[in-house]
Image 1 (cartoon, one colour):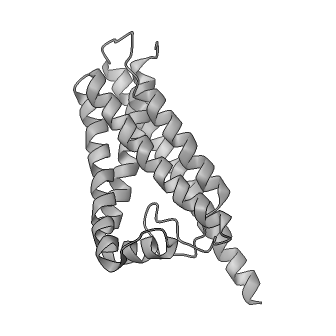
Image 2 (cartoon, rainbow, N blue to C red; image 1 turned 60 degrees about the vertical axis):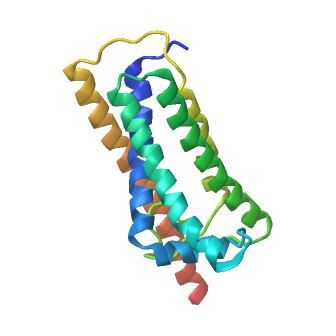
Image 3 (tube, one colour; image 1 turned 180 degrees about the vertical axis):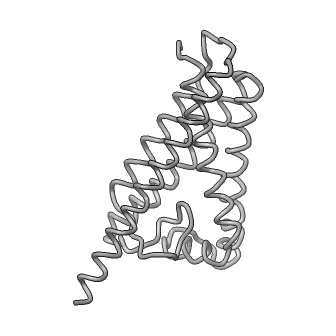
Length: 191
């Protein structure tokens, strides 16, 4: 596939930072994340499986982040890039599926568990399922081997960092808007 490496690296770096923050926030509050996992009511096997999964998922997220960053730093060799993109896409599809199952069950008042949890009222919604599926597709697309590899210059590196920061700020703004919408609906329901 012909794709400028700057675009592919932008996508991989943005996803890597999202996964790193997500995994770190889950590890920082394992008890809270365990509660989020339990609320989905999808894991069989009781507390032991829940405890193992609450460790395993954040570690997989951090592994995906490190693989994506490693692929960028190593000049995007095909195998690490494909593994990184595949792992990121798999995690995003698992999360989308968990949300979709609960939405189909009529259970939307669940914290998504995305980038921290419990701070504000949160609900899962179909838009989050779509977002995760879109990000999964983008992760696979960006991780495909490139036909044209050109060295990145200093201007490319600056552009990569600035665009990644802009993407992350946009993502955070959308997440905050969702949280504010949920909080407003909670306030209106309480009247």
